Length: 183
Length: 180
Image (cartoon, rainbow over all chains, first blue to last red; front, side):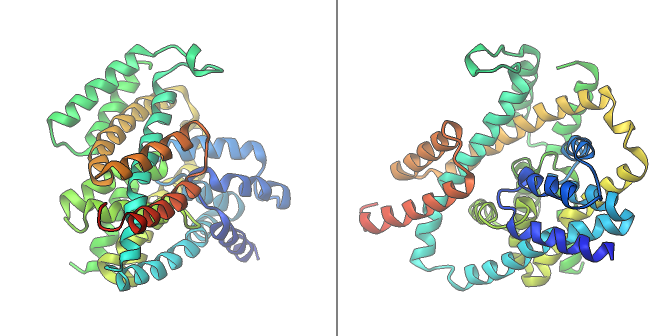
């Protein structure tokens, strides 16, 4: 039955895909070869839509792929199967953290991890700045600055620093400005 | 309100406002569970995010599940994870069923170019707060610098960065003893 095979295939992806976002992509390509659920060109549209709708890209892709294969229930089953291994693992890890909350080893581990998380977030910021504020170029030194985008970015940053407004207002402002000005 | 339902609604709100997965989630998550609800600390959020990075599955969902667990045990983990994915499943199902063509037109692409700039500003703004929590002395500053260079210049996977920095943390704190 299609629902069982969807559940099983996406459960397997949920077990092995580490690194989030597009980490599920190679496995989905593999499904285009293994099954007739959807084709590789369809995947490209799925990526475009998944990246521009709210929510984690992996979940959006799974819902989309599951929908292509098994309609409404297919999308739900694929997404839930994908998150199941991770959620169970988080329950186990969460329990362990509560138990060893004050263990010196755990404190040492988190002492090392926190600056690395700061670096990962700085990297995310750098990647998104590259995509939005520099022109596409083979190497970084030849890329041109996109001044309108940079100006808008700095304006938003000033607004964020000055006022404690909800992030969604900034996103809404970005959407409206994007509809008017071509960045 | 029932705690599970409250958690579900909060994370559904986070899921519906996050454009672009794991990293883009942090500013929205921070607003909801730290500023508005006061459920966890900045440090707890960073720890959950780090653990989610090195675990199988979807980073945003795992982060939510781990925070949910700390709030309300297994029920909390489940409510947070389901809340996080609920808007995605709803929106994508609607698009896949009815709106696929409308979504691929140029004006939509242009709107998302604007949204991406907004997300960049949000991430930078949150990053500056998290730096203060993560980089507390010279050694954590060194870990930050090494991790940043490793990932930007050498394209090392975040999975290894988190694992190696955990090992560094243990080594520095153990060898440094009370001096650090």
